[in-house]
Image 1 (cartoon, rainbow, N blue to C red):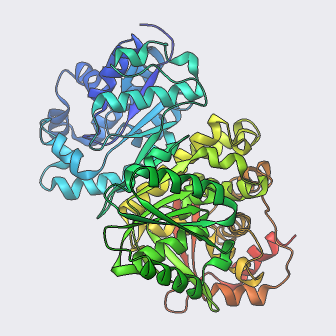
Image 2: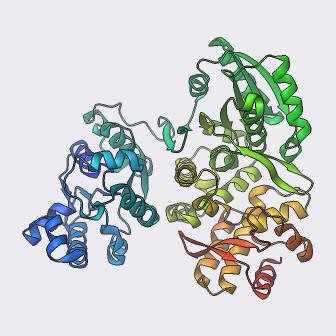
Length: 552
């Protein structure tokens, strides 16, 4: 055996396709493939199911850990780990520094594959229920150790393998031979900055894809197929792009009507929505027609509400042009407008048929707006994907602030993947989705108190520091993680303090937050990176200590 490290390590749930995809990757890379379960069986002289029955899971896990650590040190090809291998803290530590690929899969296709793959002790009796529990418990760990995440749901193994190779090549082109993709029967790897689009599926009652890439006008055309008319709602700053898309749609037989919206939060009023309704009526828009949103989060919020309420729901295509819109507002189905009593208090859940994140739009975004969008990206790092934080820290935040960089593209893809997983599992905020509100309770209070003059991302950045300080005051978060908040946000030139000196107003604003239950404040907080919990009715002294810590 060689003493070099594996080229790739695959992790994921049962039925994710680790063995099939791993074999394809090994062939494309010209290396050997091994499966940790097979190595364990060789060492034990029996099968994994038999070990579970005769020696128990604890003995199996210990042998598995020893086998995986040895393989990580000795194997120089592609290594697929058993679904539970990452549960051992020692294995998690041993994976540091490796290229770890998470093959993510939704329950339905996974269970269909598992049914064909033989005896699975951990799924015995109630496969669907047990799989749901495995996914809930293991996915945060997978995401913490992974450096690349690729969905395998309803996709050909060859396409999954190709996406893995492209993702690895973006971070280290020397790791992927030039002819690797040709061996898979796909196109050669694209040079840096010109990679093809990445499709990130969002599961749910009406699944759809978020497409990330460059030059994606044809994706918008595809999503409007069958429509006779399109209402293109856009911000003033995105008028040129909106007109280009409208011209492209007309050239493909879709009559397009453009309407610009007021800037930012001024667009999110009932008067603006009513004006759009009038236009739709004048133009005789029917159920087969479509609303296309071109702009930032305020634009997609308003356009989504218009689409949700016209004829009780017409198709919506989101084309976010800001970083904040791409990683947050444009996906998940939440639409809304503001009232005098607070932000987004009137709205609905209305899923888009697709989200098109054309990264070329970020080149015209003001630097301050790009940085503000990065706050939502960092949020995803703290709640679910530590790789995001490491990417920012690796080059002092420079790549994250370069709209043409491969670093920013990966950050967008990873943040989208976090939100896609969460909203796919919890569309209507019944549970898991609440973690996306990390930093938002105090952040929304700042926005309201300051008359929405703060950028949303800037307010959320301070809100995350407040939440971290609150968790520290409550004794559940280590000092080092609190300090990491300020360090990562500081690298991106995002604010970490608030100099308003208006605690009474901020507290009153927080009591109007949508997360309040039974008149008690609720904060999403961290116990560690990628480990969230909800702090209910925090003590007044802890709230005041957190506020004192963020005062500038």
